[in-house]
Length: 302
Ligand SMILES: Nc1ncnc2c1ncn2[C@@H]1O[C@H](COP(=O)(O)OP(=O)(O)OP(=O)(O)O)[C@@H](O)[C@H]1O
Ligand SMILES: [Mg+2]
Image 1: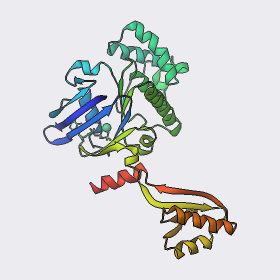
Image 2: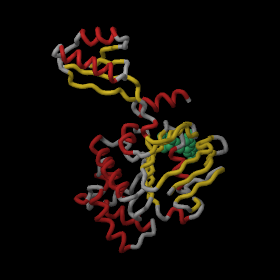
Image 3: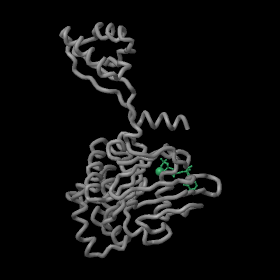
Image 4: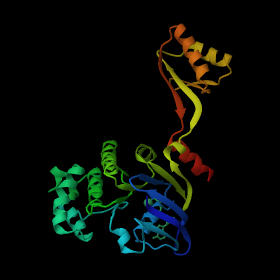
């Protein structure tokens, strides 16, 4: 079941800037969908259109079957905006309370949810501290809790891990994994590719408002047809001699031999040769393209 559907969604700001150009996507329930793209690609514009913060120039979209013009479409969504700013004289509990009130959640439900959410984002022991004393990671976790105050089915997160240190990113990733396990759909805007690689079920790449490619992560990460081998100790001439005798391209870089072959029979024969000469192998693995390699290539081509 698709919980988000957009068809030819277009947004021109001031009639000139084509922020989004005939953008169409569908997002399935319970998935983590990430929208990637360089600065100014139109990612935030897409989320703003879905939330009716800005109106489309043309095209249409639905959330949980309701047209985005219909306030009903916003009833079951949560939103963490890019560079959000909370009133810093409030504490975490108060922020969640006011945002719950703004989202029209019943007071009794807000009071029940606050401790649950603070525990989910590991801020229970900080609930009475004014948020002006919060670190960026803590603010981002509070922002995530805020996006969940109305128990939404779909959560839109605009750059949820931007400016966060690696530990903070792991914490946010854990929260997102938990939400996915609860059956929530998560829509992420990001340019942190290694982050996205770890969490997304599906990815779309946007550039200059246009969809360039979408699909599952495996569609983006290709085999390069090469293997890398690490030996215990320093370089060994045997591996180069063997590779050349079989016409396999070989390079030694940063402690690894890179072999331009993925022929397993050949590679196993090489291992036999190395082992019969008592050369110890510590690692052998296929070289895969990363999402970053793919992103740089496709953005460059386009
Ligand atoms: N309110 C606005 N008025 C005019 N132009 C705008 C407005 N908001 C965004 N734009 C322009 O629309 C384009 C898309 O911007 P958007 O913020 O959607 O990009 P983004 O992909 O979220 O970028 P970033 O990664 O920097 O957050 C940019 O050229 C931007 O300058
Ligand atoms: Mg943005």
